[in-house]
Image (cartoon, rainbow, N blue to C red; front, side, top):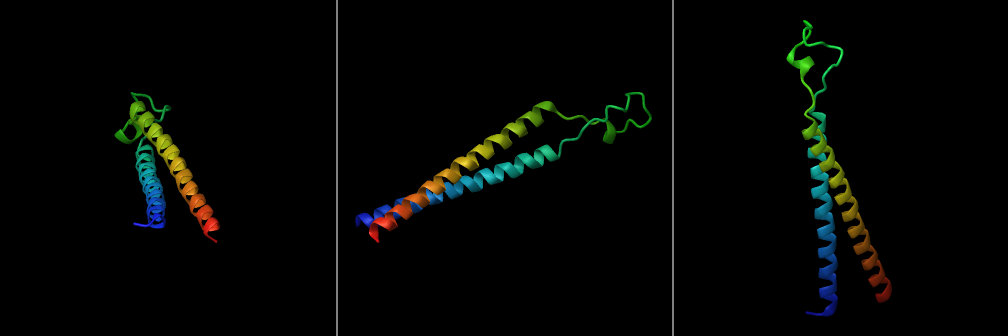
Length: 102
């Protein structure tokens, strides 16, 4: 196999890895955002003896779930940024190789 084909395959693999990683991070962001959005908040103005104390008004946020979802969201954001850098580096490499061949 010629060296040019090996380099081309390597560059495509790097681009594909970066793209797949970015898409995975994007999916994890969507899941974490959905988990955060599905949390409910307790209305602190409603007392336990209040007649308005219904399941809709008294549900509180599970701090562990919220914290985990926020951490997952931040990790996915950092993963996406890292994969964007991989894609940019692969693109720069391809550009440099094209300049050399021209």
